[in-house]
Length: 322
Picture 1 (cartoon, helix red, strand yellow):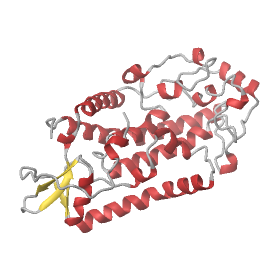
Picture 2: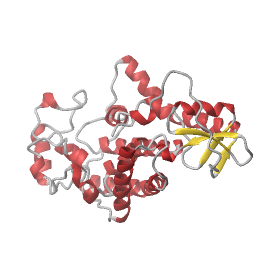
Picture 3: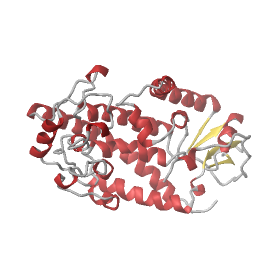
Picture 4: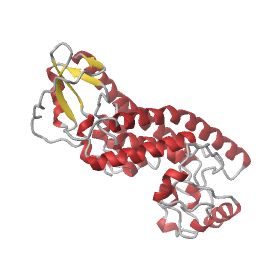
């Protein structure tokens, strides 16, 4: 499901939503307060979006950070947008700028003044099905034991027995020649449980994986020790936009960037010229370092996953229809 349909806006003036006096949100933010939240969010994420857009303007590529923007396809402009999230209403005349999104509505607060908030009943039926699926996936991951024995070998399997001309990050050298990479892969136990990583394995590498994950297997195989599963918390956060609080999107994005650094440091690529020292997972010391990072990311991801589950529960608890 694309996030564009839930985050794009028209260029015309926002239409005024029908006033529904029955809504009494949990918190009402005065305009000065939510404007500061909005500005703080933009300041926070621009430290990533500005360099990315500057590189794009120069035609430069960054093998670590560009992945977050290109693979997840959530535009920098969308990331800079702040949304208040569930049970928060915005007061003041400026709040009507949010009515450009069909998921928002204008209502009256307890004092009788107009306020604007995101409307869970605006969730279309097809998105409701997705939210239910996502809620099940995230809950299963919270309950399933974490596994920390993959050691990042998915990146090695993506270049295993591959024609050098087909290597994704061809501008960056590999730390070993192809035959040595093949030896390392063949000597290891490949245990990737993440479908969206496994699908990029080279054809010769796929039979070497102990699991053969498919997209339909995700609720049964996804586990919170996986770097990519924790990186995907950002994907799920923006797919729930604009119902996701901006702070949660930014928190998930920040975690995804930190994970991507480790992902590439543990890969067969040499990105030391960018300041990323290799984590040599082909050695015992490197595997130990990688596992420590996995455990840290798993711990950091758990509260984000719980917050996403809460957003799903809020959406699923609302009656469908406008």
